[in-house]
Amino acid sequence: MLAGVIGLWQLSKARTFQVFGELYARVETPEKVVALTFDDGPSPANTPAVLELLARHQVKATFFMVGQNIEKHRELAARVLAEGHQLANHSYSHKRLVLHSPAFVEEEISRTDALLREVGVRGEILFRAPYGKKLFVLPWLLARDHRKDILFDAVPDDDTTQDAGLITSRVLGAVRPGSIILLHDGWGAKPGTLEAAGRILESLKAQGYRFVTVSELLALGGKGSPPSNP
Ligand SMILES: [Zn+2]
Image 1 (spheres, rainbow, N blue to C red):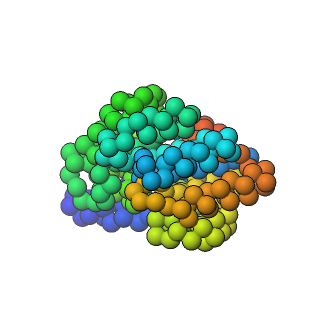
Image 2: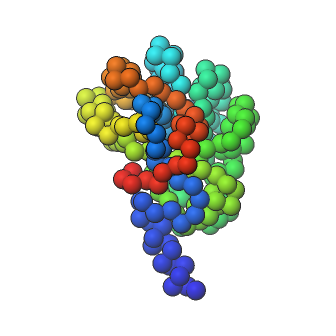
């Protein structure tokens, strides 16, 4: 029994393996459609500028928000929702949900769900684990509660670089129909991300892509595909 549990835990550490639950890094679709996602906000340093950019392009995105940042900036979270974007759960404290008790992980998720409801979110709340980690306790809880864990397949690492050219080329090099693009609007100012987001929008629109929320993308793709190379 113990060996089995340890084996499952080791498997769960692999980036491409999910013990339980539904995991999406992209969807299979022939349509030129992608989902733009912004993590770690809301943040007064970035989110308003991101909203203005998206409004100029008439594009809806998905914001994976950190509960403690919603608590600090409720009006900003409500504004994101009011402007037609999708809000989703990115844990309460953005700790690595590694080797924590089920009660701790459950609290990280449920506290943020409650805050999202308070700012007006209705319907299914999607989840994205901090650092994209898939672990034994977390997938078990998500599966028990029939929750979807949303990853990404276009990852420019804009949390570690603010070189707009690099962020843009990494996204444009990875994107394909059904992609989920990961950018960050959380914490401190991210001028490179903002600049890159503008270039990505312009380039993909010129290639005939349209932008949808993650829930719209999942609906289009039908059954999600497992992450081949997140
Ligand atoms: Zn994050």
